[in-house]
Amino acid sequence: MNFEPNEKGYWGEFGGRFVPETLVSALEELTQAYFSFRDDAGFRGEYEALLREFSGRPTPLFYARRLSEELGGAKIYLKREDLNHTGAHKINNCIGQILLAQRMGKRRIIAETGAGQHGVATATVCALFGMECVVYMGSEDMRRQELNVFRMRLLGAEVRAVNTGSRTLKDAINEALRDWVTNVRTTHYLLGSVLGPHPYPLMVRDFQSVIGREAKRQILEKEARLPDYLIACVGGGSNAMGLFYEFLKDEKVKMIGVEAGGKGNQLGEHASRFMNGGRIGILQGTKSYVLQDERGQIATTHSVSAGLDYASIGPEHAFLHDVKRVEYVSVTDSEALHAFSFLSKVEGIIPALESAHAVAYAMKIAPKLTRDQIIVVNLSGRGDKDIATYREFSGI
Image (tube, rainbow, N blue to C red; front, side, top):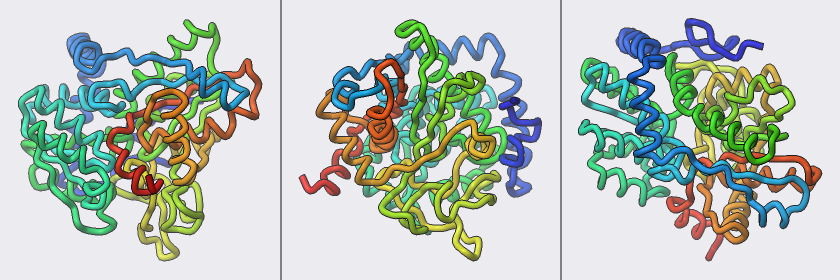
């Protein structure tokens, strides 16, 4: 099966470019720049050097021995993206896009953020390259992620609160797109996930695919075979695509994307695009599955984790769902909070609440598997940012 998009950025019927006419030329410029530089030896060399020397790659593949023994059943490995500089996988994409912006002559960078990790990573690379940085963030997410807001400002970014809609990630993306339309000649929009109009879903996936390349090499070194399962949380879906992409043609490797089941199955209580309310639609430049009410309006969403609280999903994920290459499941707030605490206590690793959704699902299936089976969980970020949220919900 072909897992690449066509020249217009479609995986099957998903993807494409649905934007105002004022953004078409900017997206064409970005597409041409990306395809021009992605295989350029100088660009690749600078990108890979920054991943090593600035971000700290490769990240380890850690055998979670105590977690595996506590659960019984399969061996669980954690791909430690939480050990990247800035504490999450987001830096992989930000380094790639800032290098593109530099080569395109764009000196002003805008971004959106939900959990704050993409905003922090964007502010970090802008500081490194001496570029102006504006980050849009929903005011509800700013409340939940106060530490990351402070980190962004410390790094020199201007953080603009968004008070419209649900005041979360969807609304931050709306404001970032409005800014880009107004300032398209001088500004690069450093989008943080496999979302939005072509070429973003492809480009972000490619920059994140270093995760899977490393994980494949590392598991072969440790176990002399491929894993039975890959598990990753899915908001927009960049950490999951980063892990999955290298394994898509390895048919025996099962892949599971974990969405936010929130606090219930009713529309508005979760952020799972393949649950109640998820239908094919267009949101923020791309065609994918979108949570909608009976009138086709974008539904409100809920998740304890700000980074999974989004009404749509990357178009490549929609395609992989429909061709049944990846299975998509959901984990509730309470299950994620339990996994957050459990991993902290048995392995000394505090995961991001987003990543805790993936850990929670691994905890569900590991006891049902045999001891010779292997699960790799993408630990996409660390949990420092979520301590206050955990305290709020757990009553500690």
